[in-house]
Amino acid sequence: MSAAPAATPVIGVLGGSGVYDIAGLANKRWVKVDSPFGEPSDELLFGDLDGQRMVFLPRHGRGHRIAPHEINFRANIDALKRSGVTDLVSVSAVGSLKEELPPGTFVLVDQFIDRTIARHKSFFGTGMVAHVSLAHPVCRRLGDHLEASASAAGIRTVRGGTYLVMEGPQFSTKAESELYRSWGCDVIGMTNMPEAKLAREAEICYATVAMVTDFDCWHPGHDAVTVQQIIHVLLANADKARSLLHDAAARIGADGAAPACGCRHALDHALITAPEVRDPAVLARLDAVAGRVLRR
Ligand SMILES: CSC[C@H]1O[C@H](OP(=O)(O)O)[C@H](O)[C@@H]1O
Ligand SMILES: Nc1ncnc2[nH]cnc12
Image (cartoon, rainbow, N blue to C red):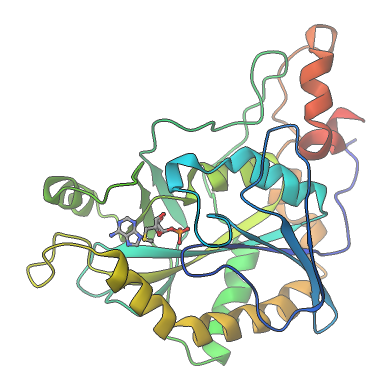
């Protein structure tokens, strides 16, 4: 029998491009959280939002110092887990691969295609091997809350969509953009993988609010993507993102069904390495991510 997952909800927010702080937090404090997986993108911001415990981490660091291919995704997720985070909302800028998803649209993506090539994608490996299911990489429960919050705030939001994760940091070629369109992908970005995979391994519920900032380069009316264009659209949508997060924090914090959520039990049937050949050094650095199942 596995240990029960943590019951008290702590909501994490991973801020993407243009999102380097979280407004309205009481008892704010930036704290350095050490991780055996290296340096997280920045200190973590702890605080309360209308009584709900929150932990914020800007994935590119304050001031946007870290490029997508340089982010230490393992350290970020491990540090959030160590900080007690149970539910993680990613806020991300994305390009649109569909005419019907113009800039300004919010998409609650539910699938990913991972085309990243040079990133650490697992907490596990030699000494302790595990295979979690990723058939449904986004927590449906969090998606429901985010959808309800978007609707309450009157934000134009599309539920469901496939996010193509490219390595970057350069934007796509037109041929790549057309290829991803032919695959039926909806939006494109550079950060949500391996982030979502690692959140699943750490048994943290994960969902993304993808904010469309541009039409990538396939669109006849938009020859090339620029950072200026992206930031302009993000700033225009900042108030919407803020009200969505505030409303969602209250809904997520009040969700009594969370401990039974499948994401929280992702490791129940995932460990394969025989106990007698597990490497104690590897187990030690998995204390936060997999302590629930390794200590049983
Ligand atoms: C500054 S535009 C490109 C940059 O924005 C997105 O990042 P995030 O998901 O953190 O908002 C995209 O994936 C690129 O990293
Ligand atoms: N077109 C695009 N491609 C990759 N990442 C993005 N982030 C925002 N727009 C993007």
